[in-house]
Structures are given as structure tokens and as C-alpha cells.
Length: 280
Image 1 (tube, one colour):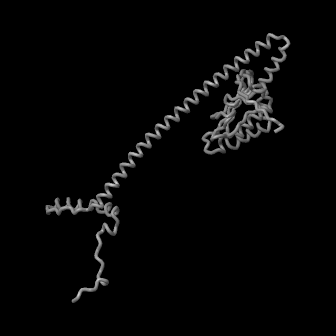
Image 2: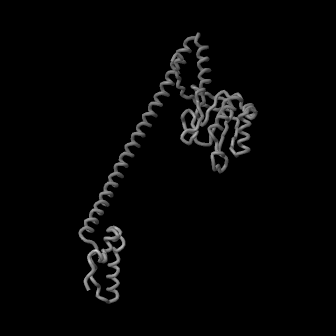
Image 3: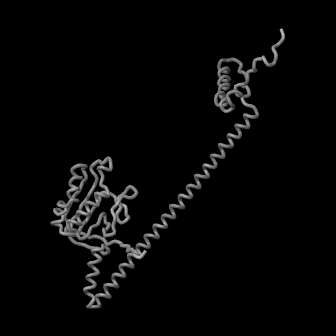
């Protein structure tokens, strides 16, 4: 019987590595023949020699793959070293900037003390300037640029116990109400966590923290107010802000304690004056 023509012959069976792809074939059959070899030796049968799994192309692929892995590991190591070096340089720069800023602030404080001493000495030597010196001191107290001391109250505001959301936490608007109520009750000077308040002070939320005079605060929030320690608490409770705080205590559990104090010391603060040209 004549063999069928070429066009009708069945296709020859291709090897698995040709149909599956080289990488898939290697991952699937790499250990099969080794297991078979060991199994035959344990059974006492002569083990057939393992067949060659991959040819020249497979060896080249494996070599290239190994080279890529080594190159990637070396590059990762180099990047890690470079990142660590850059991080240390940035930390060093930040540390130097902070030291310089602290040094400049200390120099500024020293110059202000020296200026105030010279100013006071000059004015006191002139009898006609005594009234002017008193006026300057009074204006400094109202502006918040000079330290003050006297009787008053200390208020401590804090979150509700176990606060799980912003609803049960002290917000910047809550501190604003507290401060406004104290001003309305007759406070002469106020500080929040040691930050003296002036006409230019802001109480707002920035970066997830409440800030006063661009300084981040942490709870609990201690508000100190100089004034009549006997009347400030009652007068504060009568203000709309005081009533709002009573509602916050009752509804969301915020905590507020008020303690009369015989002597409080409030620091002065920097005031940056800005000039606005109305003609522009």
C-alpha cells in the first residue's frame, strides 16, 4: 500500500518544550527525572541515566537569567547604599538648619533684652519721659510683646475619655470658642500651651495638629488667662462660648477644668508688623 501524500500525513509530535515554552517546561519538569532516578535506585533497579533536559539554547537562557538576577541584586544594593547616604545628608542638613535657627533666635532674644534695657535706662533718665515709659509698657502688655504676671485662671481642655473620632476630640474651633469666651469675660492676657495670644495670633488646624502662632500644640490644651480669678469662671460660663462648651461637655464628653490661680506668668511673643500701602 502506497504511503499517503505529504499533504495528508499526520503532523509529527513536537517535544513538550516546543509546545509549552522553555521557561514553563523547565519549571514543570526540572525535578521529575531526578525523582525517577532516585526512585529506581531505591527499588534496586538499574537507574537509567537522566536525559539531557536542556540544550545549548536552554543553557544560554539560564545563564542570561542568572546574569539578570545578579545585576538586579547588585543594583538594588547600590541603590540602597545611595538612598542611605542621601538620607544621612538630609538629616545632617536639617540638624544644621535647626541649630542655626536656634542660634538666631537666641541672638534675637538677647538683642531685644538689650534694646529694652537701653530704652528703659534712657527714658528713666528723663523725668519728662516717665509717662511715655508707662504708656509703652501698657501697650506692650496689650500687644502681647512683653511678659506679664498676675492672678487669673488656668483651664485644661482635653478630649473625651477613649475618643475614637474627631467628634470626641478638641478641635481648633473649640479652642477658639474657649479663648473668645475668656476675652469676653474680661481676661487681660491669654496664652495657650505657653503661646501668648495677640491680635495677630491664629488658632487653626495644620498638618493634623492645632497650631497657635504657627507652633504645633499637643493635648491637653492648657489655657492661662490673667484677670480677676474670682469672677472670670462665672463670667465665662455666662458667655455664649461658655454655654457652647457646656454643651460639648454634655453631648460629646469633652473635658474642661477651671482652676483659679493667685499668680500666673505669661511670656511675651514675637509680633511681625506688616505695612500695607493703601495706594497700591
